[in-house]
Length: 261
Image (cartoon, rainbow, N blue to C red; front, side, top):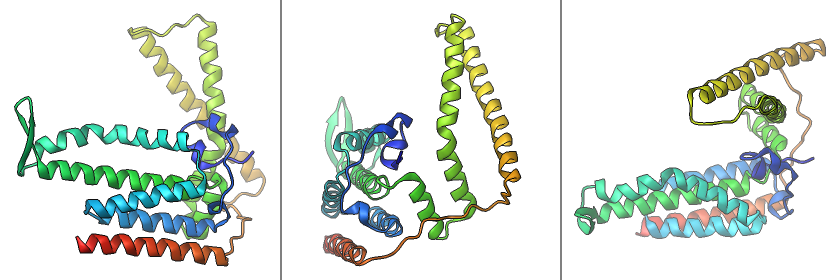
């Protein structure tokens, strides 16, 4: 079953979810990774709210073109926002600048509000573009594309093995939890509960280490010498050129707005 990064990063059950094919899926994975990196670099280098708003609109249009699952994608963007929401709320009150409004005697500066909006736009634009261009790639194809882009082999191997054995570790965890429930274990806020979960995590690590050693021995028996041979062959086609030109035009437009303001 094809496993897309779009739904495999947060939940392994997401493998059963389908991704609707789109124009973006027919593009060269290497180009998609490079364009996502370019768009993210452009976004973090901008400080103008109009330019960042335009970039966010571009990411939204890109997501619609890629036919991503809107509800699932929005949920992931909001999960990212949850990590920075407190910083965004307190930034106006901790940044020195011109007073704008006050809450319970605490003054918020205009510069602080502006910085909070800039950070919010940067984060959402970057995450949405990455989820669209990279998240809709099959996990194995993404790893192979990284290898074709000369990413170190050890990092690519680590990603491939992680994708392969996350499900194995998840099944092992479920078996151990079922064993705990069979022994009438009921979680509570006491010392016994925390000690039991500590044993659970420790045994999971030990079993994972033991399995990794057995897998390595099995691979060595089959002639593994530290290199995985990649079978995927990517080809840069005319549609990739058209898409790259559109992205470059969008990038230039955002830069013009940034420099003009």
